Length: 156
Image 1 (tube, one colour):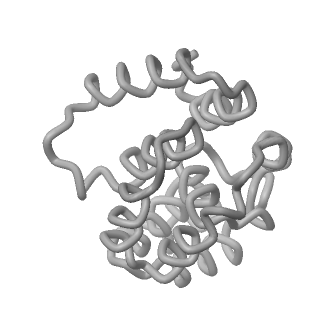
Image 2: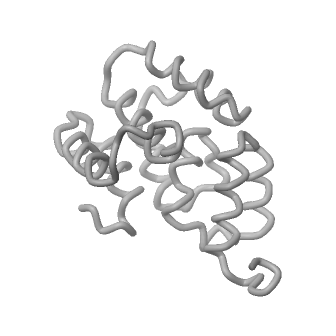
Image 3: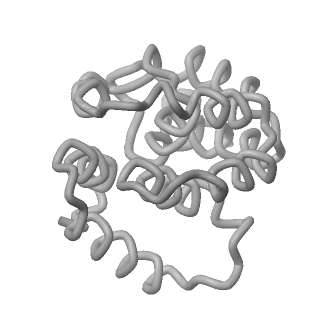
C-alpha cells in the first residue's frame, strides 16, 4: 500500500506501529523520521515519543507540554527499555515505582500504545479510565500533556 501511495502519512505511521509492536522500536522510529515530516506526525504515534522520551521527534506543542513536567529524568531506565523494545521489562519497572501522577501518566500511555499486551480492557473501559485519571490528577502539567496526546481524538 505504501508503494501505491507513498505520500500517505497514515500508512507510514501504521508501518511504524507495526515495527514497534514487533519489538523493533528503534527501527520503527528511524523509519518514521525518514518517511514522515515532523509536522505530519499525528496523534497515533505521540505515545511512543513520550514513552521513549524522544524529544527530537515530537511535535512542538507536545514538546512544550513535556518540558513543563518535572522528574522525567527519574524514568530514564524506563525510557531506555522502551527504546530497546523491552516492553515487558519496562512494564515491570514501571509497576515497581512509587505512585504518582507521573507514574500514572506513563501507565496510561503504555496501555494505550501497547494495547496488544493488555487484552482484558475494552476501548470504552480504557477511554473512561483515561478521562477520569486525567481529570483527577493533581499535576496540571501532566494532565495537560495527556489531554494534548488525545487532542485529535476529541476526548476532552
